[in-house]
Length: 90
Image (cartoon, rainbow, N blue to C red):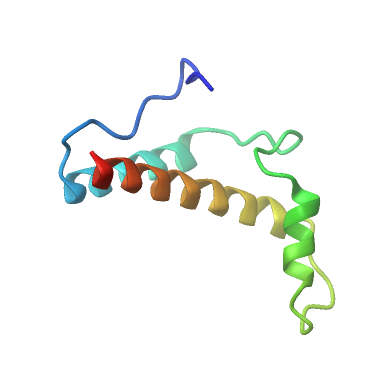
């Protein structure tokens, strides 16, 4: 999938891991502070995330904000893991 105009690649070939992590998390912080999230069209399916949350028998009720927040956390986690994999394999 091609990158959108507003997105840039987090990873540069040959970049040291510590430098990457510093720039990655700074970019994530800037993104969280400045961009507005599209709650109507999330990247990951909220129903699936709700199912994962309900797998815990101690969970009785889930607020409407929880799947949206977890969706964003999963998106960041997936971005970091795939970027780390690219750096390590390069």
